[in-house]
Image (cartoon, rainbow over all chains, first blue to last red; front, side):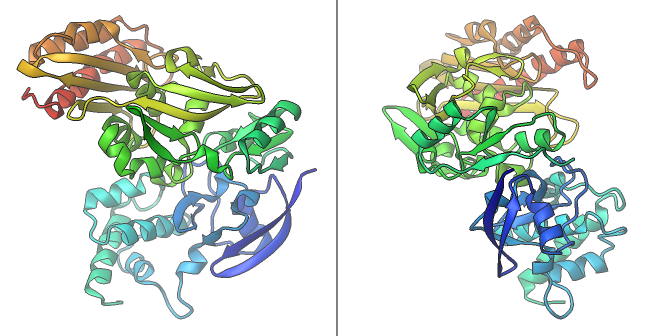
Length: 161
Length: 289
């Protein structure tokens, strides 16, 4: 029942698959493409771990079907990471204890990538507001907020590290 | 945690979507999916056919027509939140949208989807109640227009027929310079509100309220207009005492009790949030309170 031909560009590379209609975008990324950086926590849109960029805007990959993304461009955490080393935001997470177990981190990075793109000089309130849709059970958020503000500062001053 | 199998349809025309909804057995509309897909993942909802409205151009767009703001049902909440036309003509809607879920869900969620889902704690139905919005519903039988108070029938229940979809929402535009206020209480930002209030005030010469609208959400099975508060404000200068007397009418609601909050607490919140929303509306309408 219900298979569809679907073509999705993920991290710059086009992928064509025939998939079940009920396959979520998150499962498409993880199981069809092996991109397991997108994590699945709650599978009902609460935890934010599966957040990806869909045509440049954050979306819950567990709350849409792969067939809906037909013709779209998706960026996952793998796509944020340079071939060599870490992105400025990722490095800031490492430097500021922005992660412990790392489960929420891909979603956090995607959400903050959108925020810093649209608002290069966010206040702490802006960062906390952006992160309301991403749950972290380790850090208490303090390190994540610090990392986001640190990354914003580094990006504004143009110093990569 | 995975949905049951279904067939997916992505019509490009409204008529095609209406035809599919009228003919396919056990079909459901997919708008933004931010409420439906979780329910499908939990298998609270099992469908045989999903009709995705995301590719129908006729369901998008914002236009000002004859003093009314017309919004396509498939407009994403985030696009409405950042729209200059919404900010100018219906600032209450723009403010309410910032409380709807999270940015990640607003990027996908639509105004039509929220209204059709009709969660009692949702912000957008309360805004439509305050504006006396008119909903345009489409089906194989054509279009019909339904005022919001006839559209909203009860707990997650609307006047939509099973094969019918919301095509557009029309909000009457209030006079430029009117005031608006929106307050809700949730345990965390983005959570479902325990209670909330949306207010509109048109304040004329002599600081007298010419027209008032106050709606509450999260407190009852559907959004409620507080007619007694509106009557108490109209024709008066909205000082602190007048506003608090008007907000006291929120005590008259029949609140719901659940594990999140008792009815007495919701009634208390309704009054406090009504007063705050009305104070904001009065200030934005040009009166110091």
